[in-house]
Length: 265
Image (cartoon, rainbow, N blue to C red):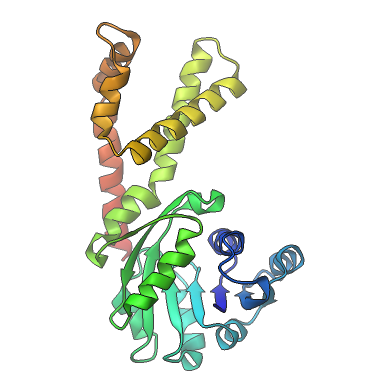
């Protein structure tokens, strides 16, 4: 594949590195454009990819175009490259909250489009990405998107009607989990642990618990029961969580983020 990235910021760079690490294509078949010429120079020097400050250069040289730009500017970007998009291109949009029909209005009729929603964990190749197909996307187009985003983590297919919930849960979710990790570490510090050790213990604990859910396929409630002995330490802690409304608070956070995603869309 010849893959072009319009936008080489945090998400764009993470995808470029993931694609190269997974050997999906060679560095000389990757093209990236961005307004930050210094950052492009770094990527070109370190990774050997082709870079340009012109989005048109990226479109003209690539078969797959990944739009890794902010939703506020995606319409402007699309209008600037509209005449260069052909039926041979696959366009993949990463712009949060931007509907397929909105993007297709700024693309030529019949353009192949796939909308995706990754999260910030793509920077460490532990992302979860939701994918939905545009009006003219083929199964081959969706497969290509799965392959690219599979290089930085897991991929799920959802209808577009669920994309706001995806944004509220997995898009915003890392920030919620960061707060949990920080709170766990603070609890450890309160009880005498050095800050660095408490933070490592907290982060690895969350990582390990998540891995158990994904690897075993068991319900989180069943896994929780495995750790919870009668009259033990864990049940005392779980009771404290229920008294503080932690579960309801996490649900409320996802619901609030989802509603905001709908508003932005």
